[in-house]
Image 1 (cartoon, helix red, strand yellow):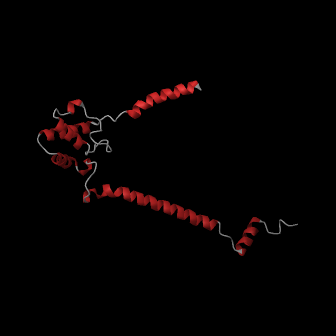
Image 2 (cartoon, rainbow, N blue to C red):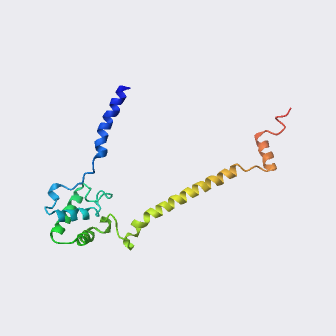
Image 3 (tube, rainbow, N blue to C red):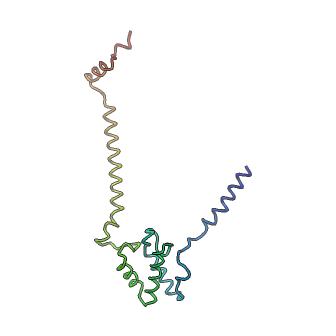
Length: 166
């Protein structure tokens, strides 16, 4: 019992710091700008841009080399005097709307926006068809036989209602 308690306490000691820690961002100190206002703007922009390698992380969270290059590019554009929207427009012009974590709704991105809805509808249709088929197959198996069908079945099986009586 004491051994189990020690093991549990040890596991808790290992897991607690992991759960209590804040997520570490991938921005390296050598990427950071000395101007805190520009650095804050760069971080805001980086949180809106998708890592094209990781795909579900912002470039601010990603350790991928391409994400690092994009973070550096964002900072270069800010130092050059671009405002936030100009930086985003510049990145989108080079990489397309897919680089945005929240792409705009326009004909080129309809598939990005519609695909979750289409998948849910297809899943619901599949479930509906499954249960309908199951209900239909179950009801036909439980249907009673007509008198002629029952007599024919008894004849084929070699049984009759009189076999049990003697």
